[in-house]
Length: 60
Image (cartoon, rainbow, N blue to C red):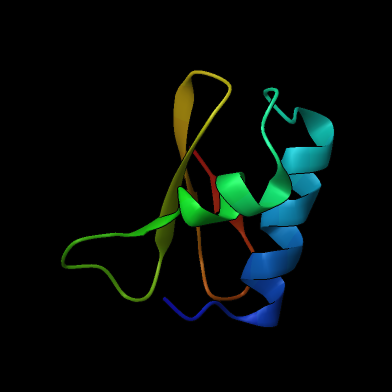
């Protein structure tokens, strides 16, 4: 799955805030596309699902 540069930066920032005991590569591989979405990715982080838009905006 291809991510925008902004999505990659947001993923890295969230992983740095709480790495949850896994490598960044494992965290990155956990990102999934939002079904019927507009290129938003979803990733599980700190007990919740985060959506990261193509512009890097992150929301739960």
